[in-house]
Length: 326
Image 1 (cartoon, one colour):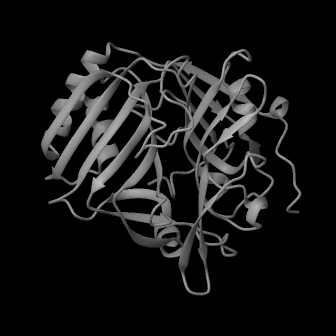
Image 2: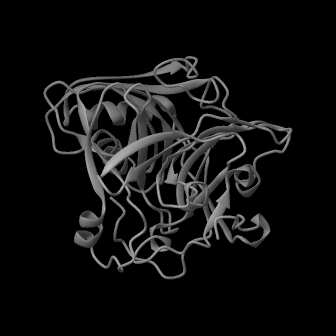
């Protein structure tokens, strides 16, 4: 079973929508307004993208620009109530699935479920790779897995030869080029929303009839975070939010914690997971699914984000639900 191959790209159903791409200055203003209700110190600006291959971001490519799109593949209904282990995807197919030119490199970042075939078990995944035009891969993806006997966890770097993903993924794709992006810095959380939810909600409010998609990378430079790491697949059906919460393992993780985040202000009718963020701290060997910071008085976030031009929904579950999407 561990040698199971990824589903052929030609067999996957693809749906797409054009997303709204208002001027970055308008998005900047909306984010500034909304974030200021949730953080004491907020700076939002439109800047030339710095070299994001450098610390603390460590992306597989320098920038976030060029043919940008968000991809929602699979979905939580393939994990909950019980895992459908045949749902395996190859990230090398993602440029083609989202209409990217075969002549261009493609940066893929975001959140997803690790290829269970790699460790022969369930794990979190922090996708961070470039699929080059010649088919080769620049791989900086990590996975986080638990050791279920003592509930400890481990961060594992994936080799270039492993490009599969299980069950579900929320990704931001681009050519990985430089260009103008939105820089966000927030300190001292005063509200109840986490960093990502606050951005998504304020864009939903400021652009009430439009669907905006954003993706990028941010670092929690100070403070601590609540993170979960999935244990082995449940053998008992997970039929409610409380079932999912009791199954998951939750941990406190430390700065500098770098996250890859994807969110959509409004679902354009594709049954999307509207926000999903995974991250890691290589120095502390930590990683997993971001929930929120637990030190609001000292938290400090800095991130870079870009608008997506298109949204692609691939292999949408026929039977759906809203459990486990937090």
